[in-house]
Image 1: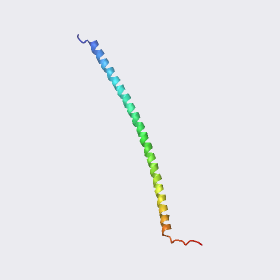
Image 2: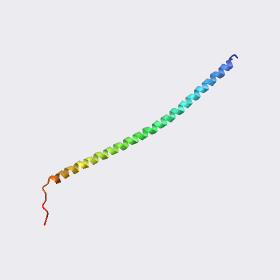
Image 3: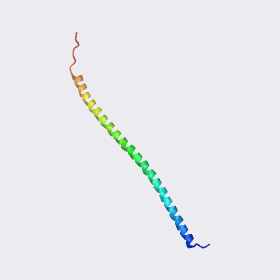
Image 4: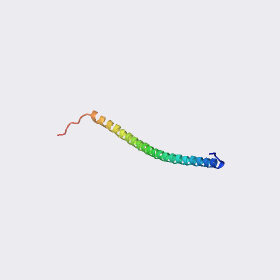
Length: 85
């Protein structure tokens, strides 16, 4: 069987259609991957903000402990009081 121009044109059209549908499939896959990456990025940013807030709270707690430590040392080194009565 010989290929005619008509057969050749149909083959080219079929190949082009398959190629375009493959591109659409890849576009859908890339869109899904990008969506998941956006979700992961949002979670990472949220976790980073939570970590920063926790770090600030820890620093404030450490400052309060340092202030208390100074007061405790003063009380421990102060002369003992004599009990009344």
